[in-house]
Amino acid sequence: RRSPVFLLNTWVPLQQLTRPLCFMDRQTLDQKKHQLRYGLPVEGFLDRDEDRKVNDIWMYLHHDNQQWYYTSDMDASRAYVFDTLGIAHGACVTPGEALAEQYYLQLLKLLEAAKKGDAETLQKETVAAFDVPEATSASLCEALADMKACIEEALASKTLETLNAGWQTKAAAAMDRVVRKSIEMRAVALVF
Image (cartoon, rainbow, N blue to C red):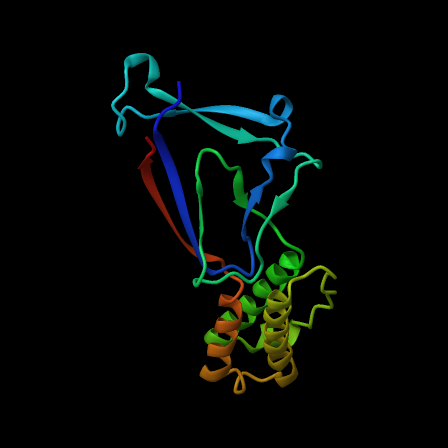
């Protein structure tokens, strides 16, 4: 017996250079080997008989045969609407994100040093030599270049005077570009 109740997700990316939402092609799932059961108590929001007060939710083990998809460079002008319980989904890590994290942490350190007037930290730092992975999206490459430019500018100056409010604003904006932001809404739909 199938329930007429569907949970729908609407996911709107405000910014997703990192950790984009991805979806599994269900045809590539080996349910017997990779599908795990999880019980969701529903008595607080669904009127059900005692024997049906826990709803089955499924989680999936990752396997190399599974195919996952995402749309890079998606913004708030588009959204995904999908069956929450019927489509395997989650955030994925894309090429270049490890480098974005390194640049982010280095910029954070320089930004904090600039705000505290800590010239010693500025003198000790060096530009980290990282290679951008070949499959990195164009938008993440641009964000990486912006962060690297801020780091190089700070380290080339070797003085706190050049790390003024203008540089601090630019560095904070460069860091903010690699932080995933999204809006997620759930709706209950009845299908008759």
